[in-house]
Amino acid sequence: GSKDLHQSVKRYEPHDALFAKEEGMEFIRQLLEDGKRYLSPRGVLAIEYDDPQKSFVEALGKEHGWDMEFLKDQFGLWRAVLCIPMK
Image (cartoon, rainbow, N blue to C red):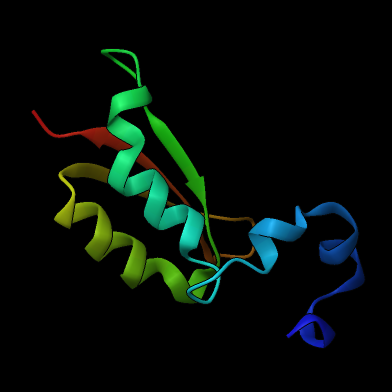
């Protein structure tokens, strides 16, 4: 819940992203399901997520036909993914 979030997170991160449905995955699901139609032909979709969500993001990305490159943050935690539509 919101009590577990650090003050800097509450202060600077979008409320909708922090408290989205599906344990915060609502918008990530939408991006991976529909994102291809908004990209230019050589476009890349970049998504930030919380470390424990990596397996869900990876499974959903594969399900929807994305090649994915996962990136760690400065603390060694999985934090972002670059998604490229599979050909």
